[in-house]
Length: 492
Picture (tube, helix red, strand yellow):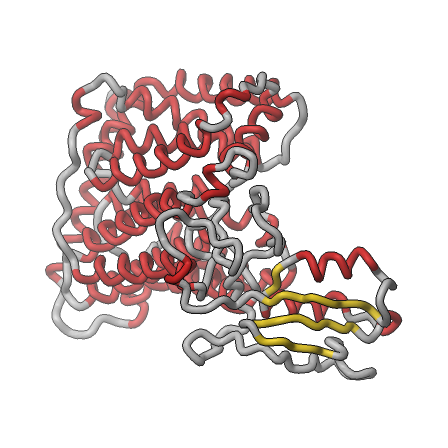
C-alpha cells in the first residue's frame, strides 16, 4: 500500500468501527446484558470519542492545580485517575462513575472552591444517565449527551458574562479584567495604555457573551477561534486550567465534518503548525523573561498550536467557517440538566451560594451593604449567610494582632470557621474567643477550641443548612478572602 494511503485508511477503520458499535447495539438480544457489559459498553460515534479525549485533557489539567495536591484530596484523586485510565480503554459507565466520584468527594466534603468541578461533575452525571438510557434501547443517547454538554457550555459563558454586569467589574480600578490585563502587561513586558482602562471590562463581557451567542447560533467554528484568543491571556495570568475544562464543551459541538477537516489539516500542514506553535510559545516565554511554573509551558504550547490549527482549518474569510452546524433536536433530558445547571449559576442572587456558580473573576458581591449587580436587585436575595466577627482574640486581646485583624476584616462562612478551629487552636494561646453576628443575630463563643485533652471540636452556633437541611457541612458555598469593606479589588 502506498505510504500516502495509510492515514486515510486508519481513519476509515476508526469510522467503520464506530458505526459497527452502533449497529451491534441495535442487533443485541433483548435479554438483560451482563454487569460487565453494562459497565464497559460506551456510546457510539467518533464525536463522542473526541469528547472523551477532551475530558481526559480537562481532567488532568484540573488535577494539576494546587487545590488538587492537598493530601486530603489524594484518595479522591486516585479514584478519579482510575476512572480516567478506564476511560482511555472503555469510556463507559464505569469510567464516568469513577470520575464523578473523584470529583464529588472534594466538592461536597473537602471544601473544593472550583467552579470547573461542578461543570465536570454535571458532564459526568449526563454521561451516566445517557449510558443507562442507551442500554435500555434509546439509541439517541449519544446525540442527547452531546446536546446536554452544549447547553452546559452556553450557560457557563452566558452566566459568566451576566455575573460581570456589576459596578465593581465595570470600574477599571477594581475590575478583574483590568487586573488580568495588568498581569499580562507585566508578563509580556508591554507598555501600559491607560486610556484603554475603561475598555477592558466591557471587552471581556462582550467576548464571553459573543462566544455564548456563537455557540447558541451553531457557528461553533468561529466560537472556537474567538475562545482561544480570549483564553490565552486568561490562562497565562489567572485561570491556568479553565480553558482546558471548557474544551469538553467545545468538543461537544464538533461534527464528523469538523474532525475530518482538522485531521486533513494536521496531515497536510502538521509539520508547519507545530513548529509555528513552538515559535509563538518561545516568543511569549522570551517576553516573560523568566522560567514559568513547569506545567505552564505545555499548556501554553498547546494553546498557541491549537490557535494556528483553527485559523488554518477554519479561516475567518471562508464561507464554510460561518456556516451553521446541523440543529440538534430537542431532548427532555438535556432540558433537565440544563435547567439544574442554570439554577445553580443563578444561585448567588438568592444568597444561598456563590462559589460554584460561574461567578469566578466577576467582582460580584452579594453580601449586605455591598450588593453590586446592576440588573438583579438586592431584594432577590432570600437570606444572607456570611458570618461577621466583631471581636476575636487568642488568650486575651493583643496577643496575635495580625490574626485579630484578619478575623475582623473578612467575611466568614461556616466551613471556614471549622477550618479555623482545626488550624488555629493551639494550647499555648487558648482560648480562641470570637463574637459577632450571623443572619442579623449576635453570637458569642468563649472558646472555639476543643476542651483540653480532647480532639472533638465543639459544635458551632450556626445553622448552615439550605432549606433546613445540612447534608454536606464542608461544602464551600461562599468565597474565601472576602473583605467586609467594599468595593474590593479582584479576588480569585
